Length: 40
Length: 592
Image (tube, each protein chain N blue to C red):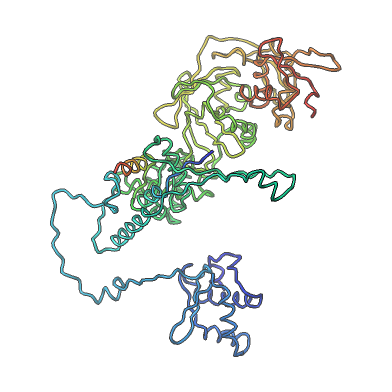
């Protein structure tokens, strides 16, 4: 069974997002951030 | 040598290259470096010139003009430990107490040295222009959603701004990277080619590694995307996780030994598990309206999870709850929790709910095993309403059950499954003994609080029957007159008239209990009709009888029992075509 992962660019975006945040982010917030980015 | 004894260098020490003589010399010189830097931090560079090292050896091992050459050869053979620097006057060797060359700092920012700051007059300050509403630019102005942006209370020339600039460059560089590489399963070579190249009769099956598929953000559901995020971020060592929250590890606050001791004392004083909110407010004096409260709470949960010798996490993926690791756990004393987990191991293979269940509500019929040990299985049905783990290695979570019928609240422990043990809920022994009987139908309902559940049963007028009990003193099953006031499922009730052969029977030995198929065989002999002869017995029993009685020895679900009887793995069990849902056991037919 295939493991679902993020693409390298999406993962890099989340890592940058987390490194620039001084508070914890929930998975829902990360999903929302990825969705917003995909729309642009 | 006290400095050496206190150092953090691994007891095995670094590995040196070269010949044995060179390794010995390098090890000897490394100890000199350790002595020199005994008060340094692990990563601070320790520099000693070649002439100093040669002088040391000359004074301790005798004068020899070839010491510099020998030192250069020995240290040069261990580039992972020593770095070589050349200056005008001499050659300098550098290492650290950790046994690795120091990370080179390519650019030294002299603009912010203390001397420079004292010598440079402060520029005249400009008066800031007040704006009516301050919209601060996020670190990644183009990319970070406004909802997640954090205020940047620092000036454009500060070191924070410099880091932000570097982050932007790093993000831009990553964005220019080629698209994600998708792992393709490795296809085995064509059979013909294998035969031509290597005419051997051995089939070698090469298993393809589990392929990793990168999800397309625009076309997947939130659940799939959440799974991809958890998988991807879960592999990142620089990202800290608590439940469903994520944070960059280097941004998570650290706690001093004093903080940890205060938390430990606080938990000891309370003598019961306390929530992360209580700990952070009472023991660490952080106000709930503090701007960094969420980060402090995350830090508390994440950092305490690393102190497993003192603290145990008993919360869920969203509610932190901490107790002392030395505190007693909840559950029966009749059987070890690890053994109960082994008994429930089969649950690892049955993870799909078989019943159509109402959202947040699960029905369950109590078996003898569950009643006796005060446990409930964490099967697919019950697992669907239970909270999730906060950490991957979490052992248990504290949950409570409220009984509307008895108006009491029972504290229980949710034991999470491991790779070889099934999950279960422990701590209901007394409640079951006082209110229910094996065969009782109960419902478990989720409430607004993720760790609080309603445990209900249907109260009926008293019924008096002779039901099965285990006389622990004699070590035998006995039937006793029992009056109960709960609704039951008749098929699971262990009544004397239905199973007379169980009276005075001994519990099965542990080695048999560990083998589900042997427990099923013994159950046939206890409840079945012998349709063979005394010399060649064949036992026939209905599925419902088998299910009720097999569960007095060990947990076996209906699905698991049906698989044992019909899978063909155990040929001693066959379907009886003459009667509906009835099976026959032929001792010895399995060939064991």
